[in-house]
Length: 207
Image (tube, rainbow, N blue to C red; front, side, top):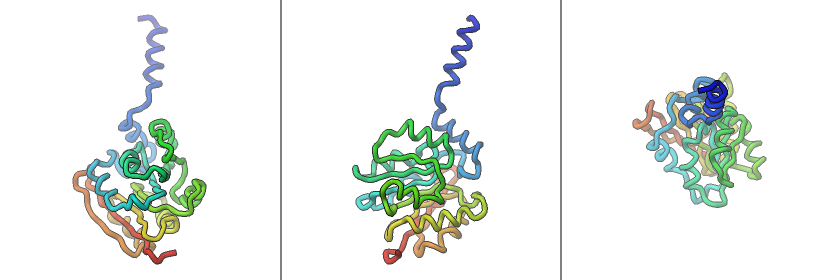
């Protein structure tokens, strides 16, 4: 084997896109405070987390920290044809991957912060979101960021909608209770690690 052939093979190998699993792992090590787990969520967790969404009345669905799109297909399969799905991530590698792999006119992958969700939703021509999903690790976010995200999320969700949160630390409730009057909780043991699931509902009478 001559030198040029070896170099060409190395270039082809380097050019191959990372698998979703490898990209997720890379994202965890590059941004550990923004990725809640080293392993993507299980199918059981996904089904349970999404089971309480009123899909017939969901026109705008937002996700914080979509990563490599573990929830994306399940959400798109449930959304109506005229709905919008806005996925917000601070990791540009994840955003680029989602834009490349998910081709659906309802879907938008945004490089940005969940704290700016109101502006991002407005940029997409909507004045609210019906449901917001988050796997962000609230307990490891920089000081003050979790509180800002929780407050911004309450503002963007319509009355009757909910903030769906899956976590591995029960302290997330401390971020939710100042804003949401009703919070339902459950566990999904068939996940690595077992996850706590939260549905924080916005009061129907809220502004």
